[in-house]
Length: 109
Length: 117
Image 1 (tube, helix red, strand yellow):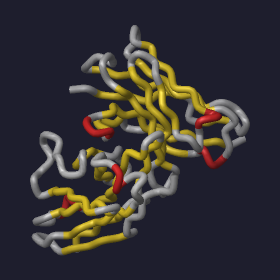
Image 2: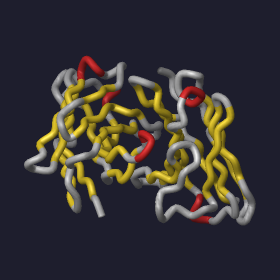
Image 3: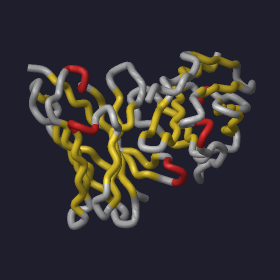
């Protein structure tokens, strides 16, 4: 199973919104509503921020939102803050496998 | 809240077996699925596999022939064994609880395992 495709980088100024895409196939992203997103700061473990496409775990700010259309899932970060600068990874259920995206480095300008 | 901690050798020789244990504290290992995920230095995440507390498992097809994940409910631990390692297996290895919708959280802090002679 190939990794999901994410843009290597994204950026935005404080207060702005940025959207990160995650493209797969009908065998993973498009076939199931089991897409999750993770935030990873340098030297730290990933943190779950979105599950089941658009659900937020307790404690995750509502500035983070997720959606899906066809084979592409998206993470939107609204009202960008300096602490949002991190790497973001998507993940999808794929039957007998689980696949991650290659990661997107989000820079807050 | 539940916390996870990886432990095991940080240096493994090529062709040998990598062995790691994840200790779960602050909650029971029962009634949950538990997973191993790795990240080569400077690269992305790769799902290794998961185990249910009853012992049933599922592995990444690309690693399946070399992986064994086991659980010890009496110690609240689960473990990973990866055989015939090469330099390509050098990575930070994370353990994590499988959460809703096949997502992962919380995660352990991760442990860097280097394969080198």
